[in-house]
Image (tube, rainbow, N blue to C red; front, side, top):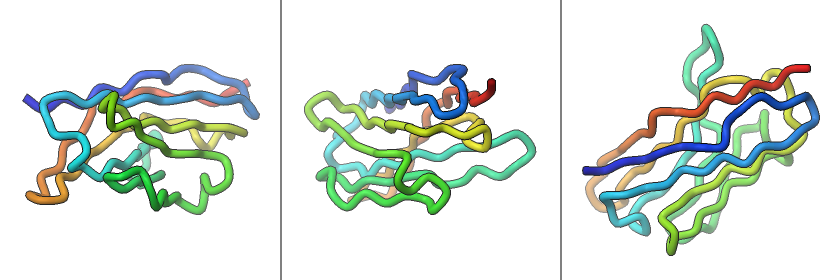
Length: 118
């Protein structure tokens, strides 16, 4: 079955960095556009970043533009989110999501907690 497994979350001080990974299995990874979402306590889930099937045309939410970088390695079936200059408002559970270009099917990972605090 399809699985998306996030890793790399944790506690970091403001101004620090984290790199999230999302390993995919059970699917043809190169057919999937990939996205990172986050959900802060008491707030709705929001789109953070997305990347095309070929790894081009990355897009970012205004709140993370210039600080976060999304990338993917289709040979490793993995998408990454490099997060720099972290702020307390970046705290939340981060989820990866994949959408099949051909069928529109969308899958979600279980999430990884990111906490930015001194």
